[in-house]
Amino acid sequence: MDLNLLSTFQSVYKLRSITLAAEELDLSQPAVSAALKRLEKVTGRALFVREGRGIAPTGAAVALANKIEGPMSVLETVETQSEDFNVYCSESLMHLVSSIDGLKFHEAPLNEEAILDDLTSQKVDLVIDVLGTKRQAFVVEDLYSEPTVCLCRKDHPRVKETMTYDDYYAEQHIALKVRRGDLDTLNFLSNHPVKPRNIKVETSSVSSMLMLASTTDYVASSTRSLATHLAERLNLNVFTIPLELRPITYRMIYHRRYLHDTAHKAMRERLLAAVSP
Image 1 (cartoon, rainbow, N blue to C red):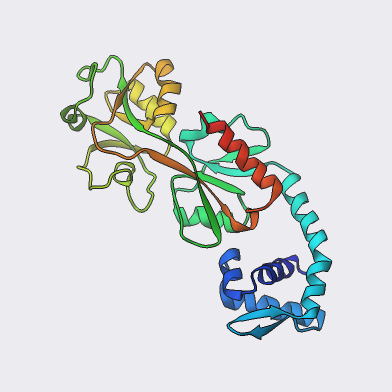
Image 2 (tube, one colour):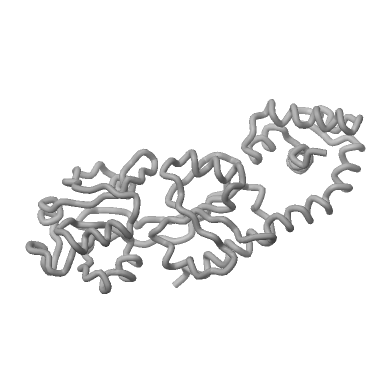
C-alpha cells in the first residue's frame, strides 16, 4: 500500500477536515480527496462521512487509524533517526551552529519558493533563514536576532575610526544577491525606502564579501557576530551602519508534519541552545 495514502489519511483523521489537511500537507484539496478515494478503493470501506460542515470518521476509519498509528510512528522515527538532519542555514549563522552533531548544513537556494518546495518534498528537514511564510503547511519560529554592521579594511585610505552617513554613501559597496520579500538586505531591514548605495560587486556569499573587503576599498556588511568572529583575522574594522535598521531576525522554518516529532523537536532545541547568550 502507498504510504503517502496513509499519511494523507492520518492528517484528515486528525484534523477532521480535508481543507486543513491540505494546508498541513501543502497539497490541493482535490489531491487530498483523490487520495482518500484511492484508499477507500484499496480498503473497500467508506472512511469518512459528512457531518455538518465537516466530516466524521466511520468505524472503518477509526479501526484503520488505530491499526496504523504504531507502524507509521515507527517509520517516521526510522526516517528521522537513520541519518543526519538536512538543514538549509544562512551562512551568517553557520559559525554558531555548525558544530552541532547530527546536522548536515547546505547552502539554500536564492529563490524563496524553491526553499519551501524543498521543505515540502522533504529534501531538507529545516531551514534557518530570515524569510517567513503564511502558508499553513509550515511552522515559523524565531530563533535569533542581532544587529547588522558594516566593515572595511583597517588601512582604508578614507574611513578611519568612524563611519558617518556621508562616508557610507561616498564609498563603493559589496552587496548580497539574496533577496527576501523581493527586497535587498537594507530595504528588508528598514521601515522606509533606503537610499541606493553605489554597489560595485554583488556576491551570494557573506564570506566572499568579507574577504573582498579585506583586499579592496569596498565596504561590506554582515551580522555583528560574524563580523566579530572574522574581523581580526581579516584585518577589518567594524562599524555601526549609519542608517535606521531593525535587527536581523533568523527563523526556523519546517513542515508542520514535524511539529510534534520527538527527534525533530530535539534538533530545534539544540539549535536554540547554540545561539542563546
